[in-house]
Length: 122
Image (cartoon, rainbow, N blue to C red; front, side, top):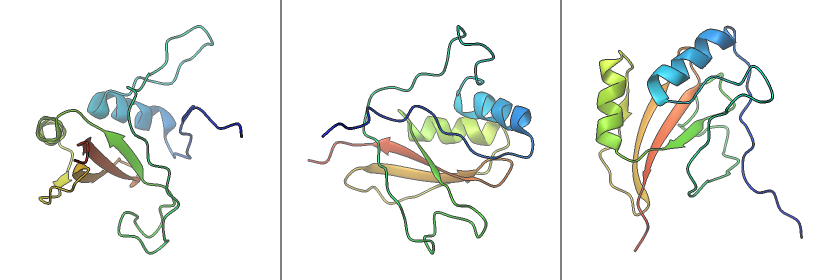
């Protein structure tokens, strides 16, 4: 069976795409979308990716959201501090799960975001 190699992009509607792209660059380090085919693009580090259709009633989603972005981070505490210093409200889950730690926030348009510091289960 042929399989996909990974995510090639995440595209979603925004009322102000330029401002939202700038927010993601400032707060999460995701470079702006390229303006030409020869421009550099954001490259993610290799690692685990969860692809999970989730119950509509899940707490991950606001009432109007159909998508929750989950980004892996190297240092959860440092990332949360950086976000808070930028005026972003972020809630770190105090539970340490077998696969790591998590935090939740929303982008300026209300899209839910989950941060994940991956820990290899033992």
